[in-house]
Image (cartoon, rainbow over all chains, first blue to last red):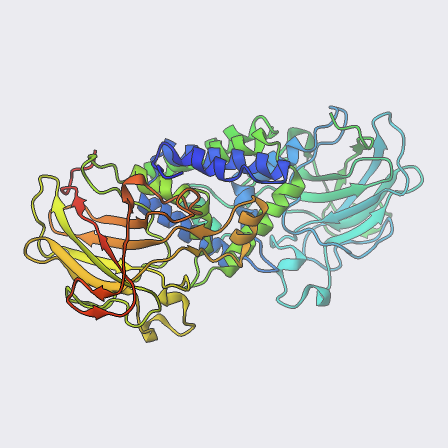
Length: 294
Length: 294
């Protein structure tokens, strides 16, 4: 096309992709170009604003490395991650809802047995977590694999506390266990606390310019898998947290908010005597059968 | 908001920005979030596709440095740069049209006098460039500053041919001159040839996946400024080029296509005797008065 101007440019770009041999890529890029151009037209983006956007994306790219993923933070804080998560995990209302994975999941976390202490010395108030994993008909799911991870009372995950390579890291407040024959699980850990997402980079500057804070309400992450069921990636949020209505990554769903019950010093659920207050969290998960997406 | 799902997420993100104290930023980000979410919904972006997009942007960020701007290439090849350029440079029809700046402009290019050879040894067929800079009423514009830059016959700009710091570079096929008292200019250079944009990175892979080539039709860049007139950033394209209908950055405008006339060996316009064929390019530029945007 030799007659490119602000009206013809979109059609010219779409026509240039007519030879794309991947139909799904063609669909995605067609929509992307249409929305990208519509955005630039809607706001009549100036050349100076375009240049600022280029600089911003460059900064996001340059702070990203194998420990920090600023593009994921950008997607999270613009609500894209939660939108993609929810539209790909439609389930019957009786199933536990999903929420964002977040950047702190680690493959091959240490394995634990029911009753073990996952905190491994991470600072925080003692917390006993108990529950069941069931199917939509109430059937117990035995042997379900359950990854659990959380921040400590200082607001940090284990992977944020080291500059060494991950394989040298001693994991804490993180682990994998399996449900018992009756579908139940129980372990010790620490009380989850609210924390800010990393905000010393370009995404933090963006949040600041938008009048937004970087905080996430306290939560415990779960990744549950069992043969014959859909994978469930979710959090359990702590009721009462001041950031439940303003999660910086938009992950809160009402059904995932639970009271983490405070107990005064005394005998704990595992029979131990505790000199300080401790917490209990009870939560049951319901998995969708594989192929059961709605 | 505690009830985030695929339907409520967009409103939740927009509500989070209600405290933004910069009205223009608020307008831009509101539109950006709406279009970004609409795109993800329209194509029902999957989690695997989202992850590929994150990886792609990460790769674009990591190849970008002070010599190479892959985000600009991405914007160029998706037509965003040309859209932003044209919608911010609306002019009366009698004015010379703008096109994209491109990534190879250099500030403080070497200064030349009319009649000088700007090629400075860059390989290519000899070309004599002549023309005038005028206002919309035909008035000559004397002393207009004119930056000129181009690739050589191998398809490279001077800045692509060195790994040394820019200030150590000997510029070639690039320079700045001023129009004479009657608004005319003339200089020697080399024939511009078609060339591919850098395609050894993620944008090149994207073009390949889309069935697109990376080539640009042959052109000569101009950046013209004069007091009392709007800045003009444009190219002159070489008529007959095979890529005029498929410029990889969508910069071609019919009014900017010109015949570069081939002459057999003989006496050149500057009176010199040439043993090989040479070319002449004649083009007049018309500047919009400052504040004259339509």
